[in-house]
Length: 317
Image (cartoon, rainbow, N blue to C red; front, side, top):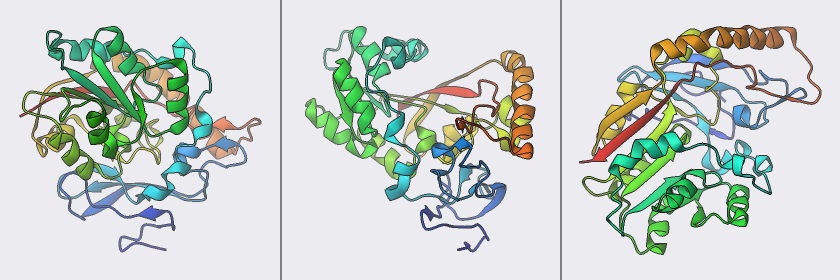
């Protein structure tokens, strides 16, 4: 099936309007053919759900926002997020290092307020809530992957719940809260399939002065500029590709003022460029040569980047 813009649409896909300006006026910037990564030799759940489907990135002609279109239907997202990748028994290293997040939000945590409450959406195994709790903050986490929630609960992390953004109000009610002082989403916003709906809900559950922290890759980065179509962060799980300008505009729609955006300094990005190009050429060679990997190779192993992530702190107006 073809869309009116001649973009192939499978039965698991749906077309979407621009998430920023909500118009349907775009041009294709990258189109990837089905089976770009041979399923016999590459492990590809986050790229294509293991199916014979393509991937298309577009740019809105009205506001220049970049996004995936079409995207997987919500009822088929499980193909992109298999539970099999979750560990059954966690080790301390599995929780990750969220010290940079804690450092970013610490100035906004009111330690004298016993009612201060934080929620991390897309928490995986609860690494950030665990760190916040260890620093005296009443915190909870929401994660859609059942296996990750089970593993976290088994380890003993408190207040980790199964769910998505839709379940935020329910989690607040469990803790007798009507709003959330600190909401964090680390590497989550780029995965959303209904971002306007999700942020209308999030905004309704934060009052003036309360804090939102996000991390995501940024489209106006050095790695995105140099590696283009082969950039590490492009795959089917990632539906939204924000720049520093468009993330500010998007949050403004929902009553947030961005007060800080941190990203790796330009000169430090340059340090990663030689390694990135080594990966770039290696990746292109495997695709051109049709290398057969046994066991299967993770499709993104050799896709390049230059630490192209940003951390955004915003305050509800």
